[in-house]
Image (tube, rainbow over all chains, first blue to last red; front, side, top):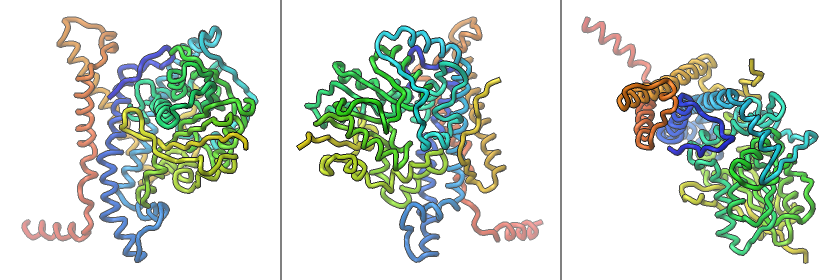
Length: 376
Length: 110
């Protein structure tokens, strides 16, 4: 297993916390490995035959698979353990950050007072979309917006170490595998694109923004999010790592940037935490902000393209009901993704949905891309 | 006292039917997690004690396992989880009559 690469803002995990988190990662490995095979066996040997006997046909979609599987004792135990693992690691990371929050806030203040590279602009009047405030996504109490005091960075700090555990240490020592994947996609598919202005939508703690700084050192890089405590952390983290990003608190559906002012717009795991309306809004804003010839690239979970059978879709839908991801299943399986881009103004033939491999080749993400054509 | 919320906003499903059973499972897994922590702490103590004549509490806190030791600990965690979950892989008794048959067998040989 890897460790997180230390930087000035990264909360320090005690030896006890490192051990606890390592166990919780191994527990998740078990749940998604050997025990997931047991769940599949329960489907093959019990739930599916029982459904077919009762209905004279196979389950036709994830909802029917759910009705059959939710009665299975092995599935019930697997699902209950999955929820419990989530709750234990979230609480442990929360306590870890809270213990050192005053020091983290002081570090933020020091970087924010004299930034050497980028900038931070907060706007307390920004409207928080209901899709991200109605429930605490990922079962993190307080969600993306909890603040206990002035200059709070708790949300971003907890997200940084929490993301490492949630991702089972597979997102790399800087939690930036999605950003690195986006960079690889741009270089592989659009080798001639030399972006001078890049926007990262829904950047949260900014972990996936920074790879674009390295890949496009001549570009001016902007990153927006609606969470102030995530942005404070993102700004100080980027400063501590020596990367230049202009962070601002804005809703990605309606930013204050000028028309046709970006060459490349990216996002990472933004779509599934939004809503149907949000996805249409992001596409529309991308089309408005892109220069002619500019590109948008949105990365998200791969299972939109890989989970095909009713059973696989039911398992992939677990987070919708058990991990406070209300839009997850609908985004993964019910949405025609060409329409939001076409309604925004992109030509249908310029829109693509593919699987983008990570640089290591060990994982892949869903890649939703489009180019804005020059006006005729 | 912290004002940090400890319960996430949203619906909390209970897969095991009886919420109390699931809460007990939560307690068991929290305890299992702490046992794993103590295993690492003992391992740290043994390694530090065997490598230097005297040491402080801070030495134990500062100890970070090498990649080799991390791999050993990962293997222990995997095996430990296997032992914790063993009973889930036992066949669920489907023949409810089996218990009665066994009781008759006990009577027969008693």
